[in-house]
Amino acid sequence: METVEIFGIQFILSVIVFALIARWYVTPWLSEKTLQVALAILILPHAFRHIGLTFLTPAVVSDAMPSSFAIAAGYGDFASGLLAILALVALHRNWGPAIGLVWIFSIVGSVDLLNALRQVEAVPHFGAAWYIPTFLVPLLIVTHVMVFVRLVRRSQPANKSIQSHSASAHHAQ
Image: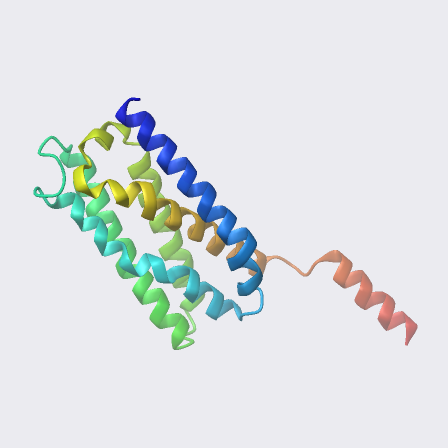
């Protein structure tokens, strides 16, 4: 098997496993939490994105690592991690702009991951940093999706069935 094929298999299987964990265990558990608490829990793994600076470490990645990938992935993860920490603090302290900061963090963090994933030419050069895109990135993708789902649901009007139930209950009185 080629290196890129092995990478693809490991990446896809990690996404599937994290998605199953999210669907079966994390989502039901988070549904019992407030929006702020659920978002904070989902953002926690992103607070460790400073680990992406590893791509800038010659002793860890191959000397042939494209600098365009290493710089974008390393600093993109670092910036995303700092935004995650800022969003966590804002959620914990219940600051007014907390939800806006979560949006900014999740958009910037998602764009960073998508940018890194499109640069398949870097795969053979990951060296000891191989675990980042094959294990951590799938976790980050799944939690980004879960954050976006909560943010979008928060901004949507109430469900029609709830509205119709409320209307029928009001008429019954």
